[in-house]
Structures are given as structure tokens and as C-alpha cells.
Length: 356
Ligand SMILES: Nc1nc2c(ncn2[C@@H]2O[C@H](COP(=O)(O)OP(=O)(O)OP(=O)(O)O)[C@@H](O)[C@H]2O)c(=O)[nH]1
Ligand SMILES: [Mg+2]
Ligand SMILES: [Zn+2]
Image 1: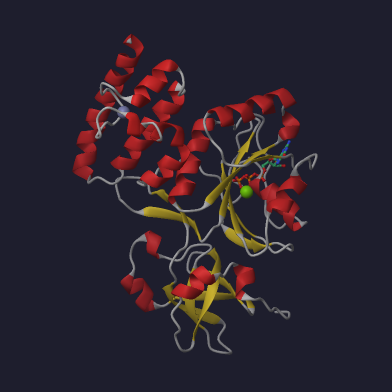
Image 2: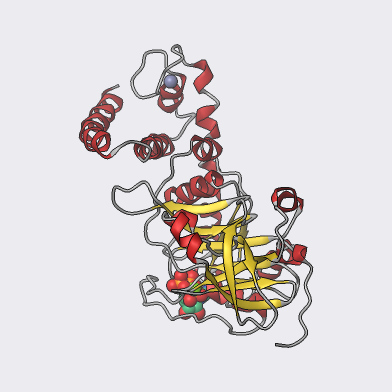
């Protein structure tokens, strides 16, 4: 397999991992490039190789979030002449991108690990939705990564439409950098290319059909990833079914993702605070310290909503995400009860706002 030689830091290794890594004889570290059903594709200084999980690993770990995912660093044993490495354990994760699993379990579904920047992609043609952007932002901040927003298919809308989308993003209080581009005219592609730094890991997320793989193929310079034509409504069928980490010629590491249908929101206040700082910065002015900003007298948040300083939709989305976030930390029985109470409560809170 050619003459590969990488420095670990070219694969995303940094002091953060160095400080946490334990030296183990005959065991080395490698990064997970792709996960297939029963094998993983890893990459180390010598290049890519296949590996599987040691039996002891599977014995010790049962939750899906404990299994290696794309971007993870693992301890692997590989004797010269072995064609399959044996993964013994996982290194600490610096960041993670995960979503809540469907159903009532408290398991997370890992999307990727050790991602520095998440590029949240929406097409400005049919796909644009600020509420969904906010959900993604919560997910990204929860996992400790930095978000970028990317609007694709600018060739399909009038400049005025794009402008109004950009101002919608800003008026929702979203401060993440925004890039706009067209994979057809190439406009903006170089701006993105310049942003991608060597040794830094970027993960592309967003609905199916928004052009993630088309873009990554452009960055690679050839059609490595499969892309698919979308139907006239702009709604895509999934073209990408596998996550993989790709090392670009410029040195950046990018992860493509299948389109996401539903985002489970996570139980991290930190993620919510980042996306709704305009709201959370007001809470210290509420009359009561335990104010939850829904109906309390002297609530600074409600006053700001009433005066129009805070947008009503943005506020409702905040309450909704916060409830979901608390919701996912409760037991099943608590959830059932809260679910009913919350339905009633949202209804009456809405009524209150309407009648004031
Ligand atoms: N007009 C226009 N079409 C684009 C642009 N980018 C991508 N497309 C088209 O959109 C379709 C979907 O692109 P993909 O790259 O497969 O989308 P994806 O986000 O990877 O989709 P999944 O893998 O299903 O998540 C393809 O037909 C692309 O040619 C763009 O900037 N402008
Ligand atoms: Mg794709
Ligand atoms: Zn309040």
C-alpha cells in the first residue's frame, strides 16, 4: 500500500490527547476513519488498515456511545504481518457530536468524535429553516465543537432571498460564521476552502440533498463520494449512507454524513445557553431566582418578549428546546407524566401570551 508516512498531528492528534494517552507496550494509537458492520477502518502513521474490536472490549462496553465512531482515537494492537488490528480501548473524546436515540432509552447515537468544527449545511433553496439551525447549534455546542453555518445552492435563489435568509439568521441572535456557496457556479467554494486548516477536523451535517457530498468532492478534486440527483421539490433521497473521514490534500480532515431526518436534542444546558444567550443573559434580572420564564411575575424574559426586544418564535423555541433537554434526563415514568403536563402547560402559556 504505497509509502505512507504521517505525523499523528496530521491526523488530528494534539497535546490534548498526548496528555491523556497512556503508554502501553505493543499498543499504538490510530484514528477511526470509517465504521462498517463488523470492521473498522483505521489510520495511523503508516496509513489506513482494517481492525476489529477485541472480545474484551465488547464484553466491557454495551452502550452504543461507548463503541468507537468516526473520528475516535483508539488503542490498537497490530503485529507486523497482521492484516487486522485489534482494538483494545478508546481514548478520551475531546468533543463529540451525538444525538438522542429514538424511543425512551437514554442512549446517545454517536455521529462523530473529536471534531473541531461542525459545518451545518442548509440549502437556501427549500431547505432553509432557522429553527432547525438552532437545533443543530444546540447539538454542536453540547458536544464542545465550534459551529459554522453553510448555505448552499445560492445559484437557485435571487440575491434578495439570500439576503433575507442571512438577516433572519442574525435576528435570531445566531452569531456563528456563515458561508454561502454554489457547487454549480463555484461561487464561495474557495472561501470555504481557505477556512479549512490542516490537522483540523470538520464534520458536515445537514438534511439529505443539500449538497454536502458534492461539496466535499469538489474539495477533494474528484468524485470520490456518491451524490444523487434530488427531486424537483428539493427533497432528496439519501445518497450518502456511510460516514467517513477524508484527508484533503490541503491537510484538513473532513467527515461526510448521511442526511439527518430528526435531531434528538440533548440534555445539556450549555448547548442551549450558547444559542440563546440573548434570553439567558436576561434571566438574572427576573424577580425570582428560580424563575423559569413562563408565567412568573416580574420575569425579565417575558417582558422582553412582550416589548418585542426578543422575538416570540425565538422565545418559544427556547422553551421547547429547554423542555426537551430536561425531558431527556428524566426516567421513563417521569417523562410520561411530564409529557401530559407539558402539553397542557404549553397550551395555557400560549393563551396567557395571547391574552395579555
Ligand atoms: N443547483 C445546485 N445543485 C446542487 C448544489 N450542490 C449540490 N447540488 C445537487 O444537489 C443534489 C444532492 O447533492 P448531494 O451532494 O448528494 O447532497 P448530500 O447533502 O450529500 O445528500 P445526502 O448524502 O443524501 O445527505 C445533487 O444532484 C447535486 O448535484 C448547488 O450548489 N447548486
Ligand atoms: Mg451525501
Ligand atoms: Zn424569568
